View 1 (tube, helix red, strand yellow):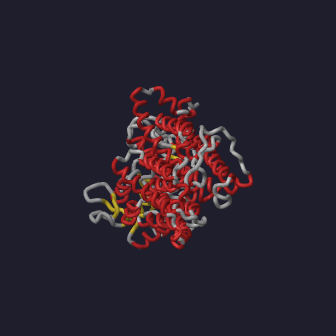
View 2 (tube, rainbow, N blue to C red):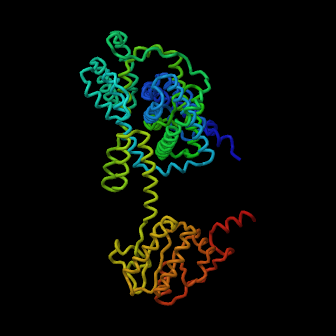
View 3 (cartoon, rainbow, N blue to C red):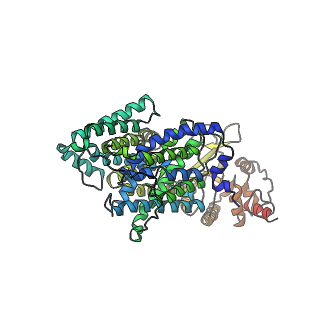
Length: 583
C-alpha cells in the first residue's frame, strides 16, 4: 500500500526542509516568476487566446505539480510547443479567439490531464519509448519555424489571413510587404535586439520583463495605440475563479487527435528534461509514473481555473536548477509572484504592444533548433537523420499534427524494421584466448575447420523468424560441403516466442538433412526455460554453457558438464522465482 509521501512527494520534501533551502528556493522562484510573466502572456497569444489565460496557467498548475511531481526542478507552465499544437489542432474547427475556441482550449487541457493521470495509474508511460529523439528533434525544429512565421502578423503589423501551412503565411506577407506598419516593426525589432543583448550581459536577468516595462512606458507616453500599434488592452484583475469546464460533446471527438498528440509530446519532453536535470543532482530521484501524474494533475486542476494547458519548460527548469533552487518550493514561489501580479499590477499591462510579446516568443523558440544534432546524425546515423528530415519536412509543409503522426509512424517502423533484420555475425576465436569475435572486425580471429559459429543479435520472434532461417541458410551455403557443426551463440537472443521455437526446430531438421549438427551456446536463463518447456533441451551434447565448451566438445570430444534442466534444478528462472514466492 502506498504511503502518503509516495502520492504527494512534496510532503517528503517538507520533512527535511531547512532554512537554507528556502533561501535558495526563494531566489530561484523569483527569477522564474519574473521570466514567466512575459512568457505566459506571449504563449497564450501564440495559442490564440487572451494573455490573461497564460497568467492563470502560471498560478495554480505549478503549485499542483509541486505537490504531485517527483522532480525538484521541473518548471511547469505555458510553453511554446504546446501553444502552437493547440492552435494548429483546434483552429481547424473553431474560430481563433472566439468564446468556443477558448472553451475548447481549456477542455483540451482537461482531457490531456485526465489521460496522463490514467497513464500514470496504469503505469503505461513506457509507450513514449516508441518515439525516437531524432523524430522529436525534427518536429521541434519545424515547429520553431512555424511559431516564428505565426508571429509575422504581429511583428509587421500586417493583417494576415490564417493559412494551413507556414509557406502560405510567408507568401502573403511578401506579397503585401507594402502594408507594413513601420512603428510596429520598429518596436518588434528593438525589443528582439534588446532581449538578446540583455541575455548576453547576464543570462538570468529578466530580459523579457525589462523590455516589456520600457515598451509599456513608451507606449503610454507617446500613445502608440493611437498611431496604429496593437496593444494588449484591458486584462482582468484578480486570481482565477473556479469554473467547471464546458464539455462540448460535439467537439470532444474532434479534439482527440490534438489531445493524444499533446499528451505524448508532453510526456516525452517532460521526462527528457526531468531526467537530464536530475543527472546534475544526487539528492533526489525522478519517478516516471509520478512525473506523469504531476503533469496530468496540473492540467486537470488548471482546467477548473481557466488555465492554458501547461507542460514542463526546459529553459525555466534549467534556470531553476542553475540558480540554486533546491526543491519544488521554487515553483510555489513563482506561482505566488504571478498571483501578486494578477492581484495588483494587471492594469500596468494595458499599453503593452503585442509586437513585444512576439519578440519574446521568437527569441524564446530559437533554442528549439537543433542544427548540431542534425549534423551529428548526418555524420554517424544516416537512417536517424532521414527520420529527422522527413518529420521536419512533413511538419513544415503539411501541418504540425501530421508531422507528429508521421514521426510516430516512422519511429515504430524503424523499430520493427531493425528487429526484423538484425545483425547475424560469423565468429572466430581470437588467438591465444577463449574469446570469440566477428571475423570481419577481428582479422586475427581463427575460423575452425568444419565448424561455423554464428551470433544472432536480437530476440527471435515471429517478425524475424524467416530472416533467421534465411540467414543460416546463406551462411551454410557459403561453406557448402565444408562444415559439419553449426554453433549458434544465443547470448544476444533475450526472448523467443512460439514461432521462434518452431523455426529453431525447422533449422535443426534442415541441417540434419545436410549432415550438420546444430549446437546452442550461451543461452540465457529465460530463453533456456522456454527451450526446456518446448522439448529442445533433451540432448545435452547439443547445449553448451559457452562457445569454447562447444568447440572443445567438437574438436576434442570433451563431454560438456551435465546440467539438469528440470524445473526443480533450472538456474535463476521464472518458474523457480514463482515457486519460492509460494513457499
